[in-house]
Image (cartoon, rainbow over all chains, first blue to last red):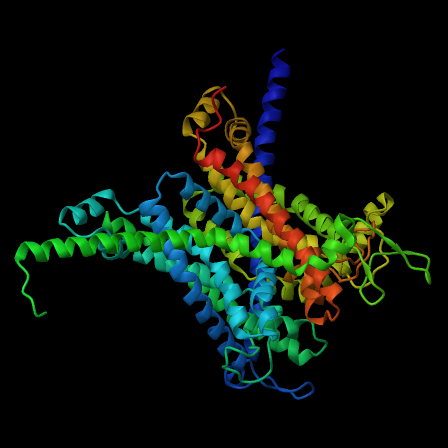
Amino acid sequence: MQQGFKMQTRLRWLGDKTATFLAVLSTILVILPLVAIFVYLILKGAHSLNLAFFTQIPKPVGEVGGGMANAIVGSVTLLVIASLLGVPIGIGGGIYLAEFGRGTKFANAVRFTADVLNGVPSIVMGLAAYALIVVPQHHFSALAGGVALGIMMIPTVCRTTEEMLLMVPHAVREAALGLGVPNWRSVLSITVKTASPGIITGCMLAFARVAGETAPLIFTALGNDFWSTSLNEPIAALPLQIYVYAISPYDDWHRLAWAGSLVLIVLIVLAVALVRFVTSRGVLKGAS
Amino acid sequence: MAQEHSAIRRYLLARGNSAIADRVFKSLMVLCALSIFAIVVLIVTELVQRSQLTLHTFGFQFFWKSYFDPTTGLPAYWDPVNGYFSALPFVYGTLVSSLLSLLLAVPLAVGVAVFLTEMCPGFLRAPLAFLTELLAAIPSIIYGLWAVFVLVPLLREYVNPLLVSGLGWTGLFNDQNPTGLGYFASAVILAVMILPIISSLTREVMTAVPHSQREAVLALGATRWEMIRMGVLRNARVGIVGAIILGLGRALGETMAVTMVIGNTPQIKRSMLATGSSMASVIANEFTEAVSDMHLSALIEIGLALFIVTIIVNAIARLLVWAVTRGAPVTQR
């Protein structure tokens, strides 16, 4: 009896240690690919980052050198279009959810749909933008790519804006309304302003997410090898260029793909780290 | 400005203006909120309209029919040049790669979540959580690039031979494919990509379990693992299932990384090491090269199916996660 009890205790102790070991092991296994990806990006990409990379357009196959300047400019163009579309509408939706629709069925439905829309594959967004803009226009364009990315930003921006606005204490709103400020002024210059660091970081997060999107651009922006600033023509984009180069059979293009990925990831990590920094510093808490 | 208003009239005018402004502002915001629904409606109508051709020609047969190639005598599914259109190999490829990736990712994700919420020393928690979040922020094109040049050679040289010799008898790991590309490679990279989503949501539902549950189990003399198993995981199980389904939704629709490593051959193979094609990868791979209307329409119909499936999967997942994190905790029993 006593012996059996001891045995059982030993087994339970063993089970506990095994579980702890497995949890630590899985954490290491998860961090490993992250480290591996960064190490490879730096090893294979860093030595290709030179002035030419940022100032020249791609060279034809067989010529060594060239850069991704047009792709970087193209990505910026696409992201500007996407932000112009996604940020105001997203913030507006967030304001509605937090300020006007609290607890209503309509608001719950919007919130739910936004969350679900967040999980829709980006390639489907690309198909929708293709059907909406490319088909009627009969040609690929920067505009279509920007719209596809913009649509993807709306749900993310909307939900983060709402979350940030909900953190603003009620007393602030009441104080504003008590002074006779019209509601719209109160919302825009008091509530939204108080939450603005959070809202801006939310927008940055959505921005970082669409900055790396490739799938919706394949058949909207299409990509090209030249300087192009016209919104009505196909335009190059960094992720798109990386894709084309990565699946090509040329070593020099692979080199450029790694370098382009390094640039992309540095931009995204900076954005995410900034978000992390701002939210952990508790900029919002200072207001309450 | 010709007429001078009295103070009270000016006040009333101002009030009146503000009342209009308030109403205009509110309706603008409602409009923005409505745009979320508009996007869904837009996607559905546009995709249905553009896939009319295949919808009418094949109906639902599109997703499970197969053809016989008269020259080879083998079943054929997808050959736009000869007019074979069947989405079956893509549905199969999507299902196989995502389910296999879940199999790889779920234990790891739950392990990470358990470590971060219950075991991790305080000073490690924030940096580790940040690192797993960072994994979610890496664009899929970079995962794809890394998979093509690092992961696939690694699998080809070391892992696949092991799988063939160890598990070859199951018939699921026969190696007739020297490239290393295929279902298994895409499942591995998908697992890395969906891990952060599953683990961060699991973490969220685990922290939502009230502390009294943990204390009660510990007070009964349980070890830490027993406390986690009985006090935490059991109470959070609905939410964890939600997190897993959300990860599934992400895996189903993942495009770039899969396109780069799955091999892009429209075939159905039993071996996990064979090349195949997924719904998203066939769209990404063939869309710009599609010339016939039927081909375009078929690809858009695959996109429509993908949209509907991911909407349903995500809706279920969200409901499950919400049930845990915002409703009453499922502990009363």
